[in-house]
Length: 164
Image (cartoon, rainbow, N blue to C red; front, side, top):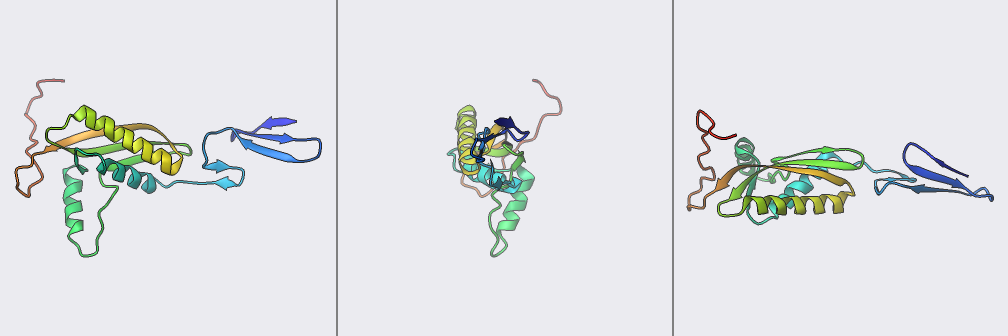
């Protein structure tokens, strides 16, 4: 006899009174022995670290979050916030990631975005077992290495937009 429940597990009872439970989901987070829940902060930190590993990423986060992060790093004993510039949505089996970055000048932004997506998807799926449905990337700025300590370039937008 066989029956399927809402959690996509098949319960099979043999004539000897033994019951086998097999999960039909690809997720290792839900098993007959229990459920594993991954917190948003875990996925956020993994995605942040994976993003920083990609060559051509100068910083993760928009201007305000990077400024606050720079202040935080000056406090003795403070750590780098690995989830800065990263927001995630985590479900039972899937995750979606949004990233804000600053790219190094001269890199192909399309290639950089593809590399970030590949690295983030591989890291999150390998470490958590969650399927990454999307990785959205906003490039806030480019970093010009002119030898100064100022990381911001001018990003003033014109009063009227010429293109859509």
